[in-house]
Length: 276
Image (tube, rainbow, N blue to C red; front, side, top):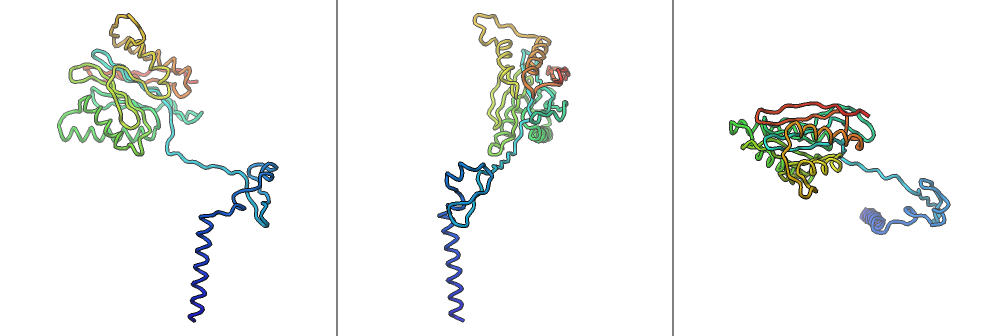
């Protein structure tokens, strides 16, 4: 019995050694074929190897998974002297398909602040739910609404907290501060932000941002006298920007939700774009 046990132990040891050897030094007859065989066959074909009795499958299909999907959309914020405009289109894109033409990307945070979000719609919905919860919690604890500055910092912290698996969202926040002056905030996916007067994000950013920089901030206009636009002039400019972007960007279109934020609250206007 002792001799049998020793034989079994030696066999088990030899088997484990062979497995380890295969891991460290893979058999070339399994993973590769002579160049002459490869030249005569197409990817996916099974051919005979130079090693007796071995075959190899050429080529292969790489399978990848991404947890993110960009559903398009363009969002912008333009701040005036005593108002702010936050706008977004409503087209939901999925590749070359349009599952729906009416998806809202804007959320009224308070009577003086609005957020608009482009990117992945699932992450947009989740982020907006988290923000609404935090705003409600703040109101219960402090018996007042968050200020625009507090909201901007809270959003930055929320995005940064998820920096290792971030929300695939690109946000703009607009509103009026405690002094009644309009401001806008632009964010990247992990919470870096800055306070500006004009900002655009999303798939139409490259077409709209230069226009609002030039027409509102008077950038690239040497010697021009800067004049503040009125609320209606700003709304007309936003409509023109989205109309032009919709002609060039397949992920921007259908309708635009325009949020006009003043000391009297938030008013939402809908503007129709082309549906093609």
